[in-house]
Amino acid sequence: LERVPLEAAAGRTVSEPIGVYPPGVALVMPGEVLEDWAVKRLMSERAAGAALFGVRDGGILAVTED
Image 1 (cartoon, helix red, strand yellow):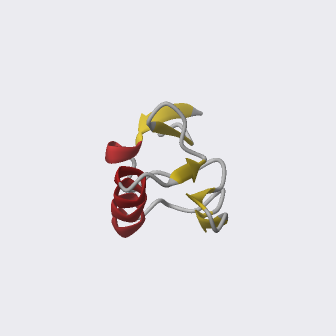
Image 2 (spheres, one colour):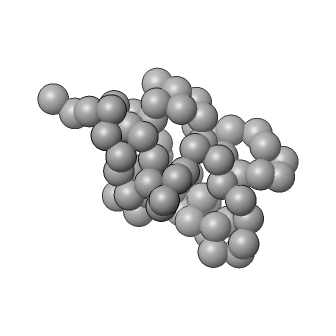
Image 3 (cartoon, one colour):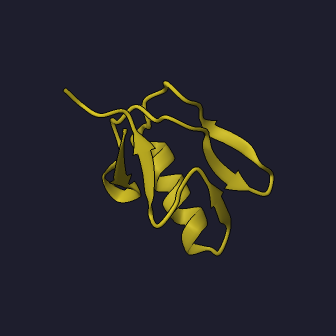
């Protein structure tokens, strides 16, 4: 696993649920590819002051690319 900045994470396979709290429902689940629309939504929510889960220190844990 490697930490990838959220802004650069589109197209990466995530290793843990990622979403916005509230409501606490994941936008992306482990094993799914983080799509560009989801990155934009997460960044927008974060800019508006929402709490994100699965995003720590501005990055996500993604499966290491070969």
